[in-house]
Amino acid sequence: MPHVIIVAANDTTDSNPFQAFTDFFSTPAWQFIVYLFFFVVVAVWLAAAYWIYKDARRRIEDKVVIGVCVAAGLVFGPIGWIVYAIARPSEYLDERRVRDLDLQMMEQRLSEDPRCAFCGTPARDDYLVCPSCHRRLRQPCQSCGRPLEPTWSVCPYCETETPSASVASRDRLR
Image (cartoon, rainbow, N blue to C red; front, side, top):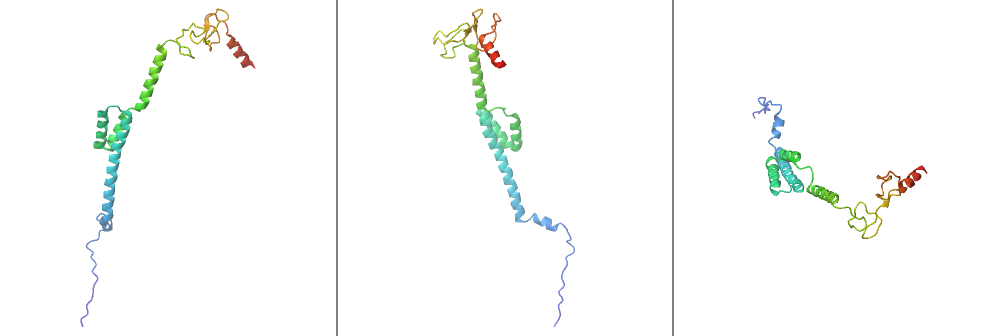
């Protein structure tokens, strides 16, 4: 019977040391990683546009400008988000409205006549009592008789120290 010698074939022509590494790129695991990467990129891209939309609604009144900002976020993605973050208004619409109301109230207080703190009736600066509710608004100076504000420690007209100031100075000494 003939003896057959089986010789192990050693393929020495393909001696690439990186063959196992390059074979990885043709596996399903690599394809999954690539698909996952593209999914994350698309998710971040859409999240940037959504964040721009949510933030722009709170900062910008004009709907067209909001639409342009969101379109820039969709077209340019995270780069559009960075540009929007730099160029966006610094304050929210609510903050701006509160600030405007505060300014209007201050302007109204400065422009209107002084009023009684108790009933709101207009009262001039030289009134000692309110003409409507008869509450005492100011004390008269003991020397010249002119009305003094409660916070004044000296009469600005005759330089006399007010009684409330002398009581306050005695209280400080104790």
